[in-house]
Image 1 (cartoon, rainbow, N blue to C red):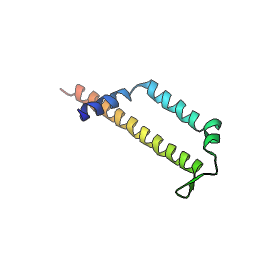
Image 2: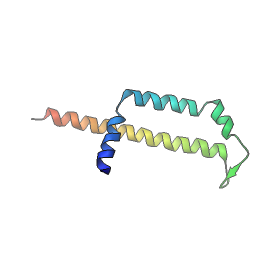
Image 3: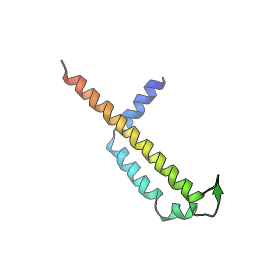
Image 4: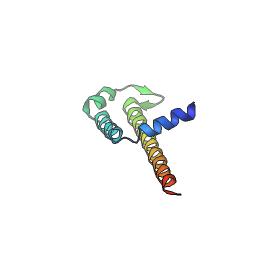
Length: 85
């Protein structure tokens, strides 16, 4: 079941709309209102809150790009398997 869910997720990520949605979401998350919300003098584990917000956003965006590349790789494998006799 986990493998089927994984394949469903990868197929869903191939949509062009997903790329656009995640791009726009990334632009919104580094815009003024969100940066202002996290620009506080609070410190968590010795790091300012804004630093943690930006670092976590960076890590999450790398993970999403990784998922997209997996989806593209799976799509290319499917196309090459169909062409071989």
